[in-house]
Amino acid sequence: MVTRSTIMDTNSFRPDMAQALPAPLRALAERRERVLGPSYRLFYREPVHVVRGEGAHLFDADGVQYLDVYNNVASVGHCHPRVVAAMTQQASTLNTHTRYLHEAIVRYSEDLLSTMPDAIDKIMFLCTGSEANDLAVRVAQAYTGGTGVIVTSEAYHGNTQLTSAFSPALGTAQPLGTEVRTVPAPDPSLAAGADLGEWFAARVAEQIADLERHGIRFAAFVADSIFSSDGVFPDPAGFLAPTIELVHRAGGVFDGWSEHFDYQRWVDAAASELAGSGVDLAWYTTRERGRDEVLPWEHLDGGLDREWLWYDWQDALAEAGQEDCRWSGCYDCGVCTSLGSETQIGPSGKHLLPLTVVPR
Image 1 (tube, helix red, strand yellow):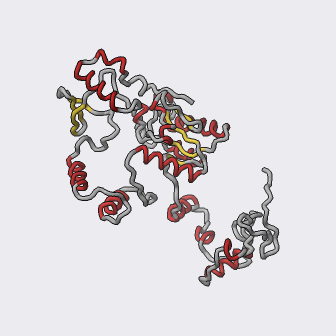
Image 2 (cartoon, helix red, strand yellow):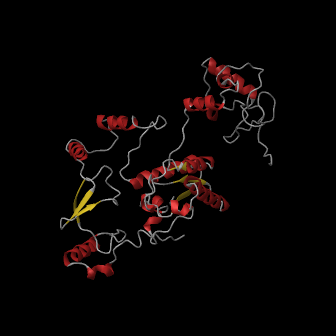
Image 3 (cartoon, one colour):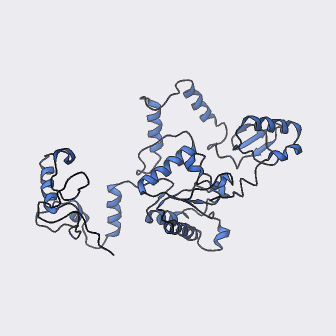
């Protein structure tokens, strides 16, 4: 599946343009072409010879100042003095990997996490955005069991083997993966007066459906925060909410972020949804149950035997452990024959395995 990037393919310097350049620029461009790999792009028909940056500006060899709204590297401006000082101090102190104990990486992680929502409680440090997006999508694929990825039509997410396959902005030289689908940018002009969030979510839903039609399980929708490669579309605030909800309902994740169990989140949601209903969350979830009480999952006809669960619960209360059944023999729990056990009758006498598939 070959794609064409209207941004990258039409905005790059080509060697056949060299003769029109001033002699100093032509000489530098020719030296660059001799030593750098051919996949490196050079912007503009008349390239900009940048020599330094400061704050939001770049300066070329002739001293011309440019307002930099294109750079995707500097996040707090060029040569920010605090960043320069911190990098200089660390480089002159220690430059090594993370497999030693060191105060700086722990302190830095604590500082970063203090700015995040409670649900984000771990950090993985990577060297580049390509690595970060590569890992995010691999996590999403492992979490969902799917491989399908949806991106916007001019997205750039990296140059690893995985991320380049869902980076249409790389242009015709890089085919998109067969399990990748694209959607238009969230451009209000394309929505033609419709609610932008709902319009964009509908485009994503169409591509999720297309993946499913081709037997590809959906894994992730990936987008940078302001769709910078697509033309910069940060507004209106919150317009991605319908898309993120759609992605989660379809079993995928947004940009590699995945839900983890947070008991307080469930309590808060239940308090909101059950308000005024007379339903006591604790009565249904955390209280101890009697042996003869009907359990919430008893309508299911497969899985762990009820009697075995009761005895296992009593063992847990008594802090009595059990050996791993893979090595000590089957406990007749009634759930698994895949590890060599031939037992298919639980202690209550019910025939449990193999489970019978019930057609819908």
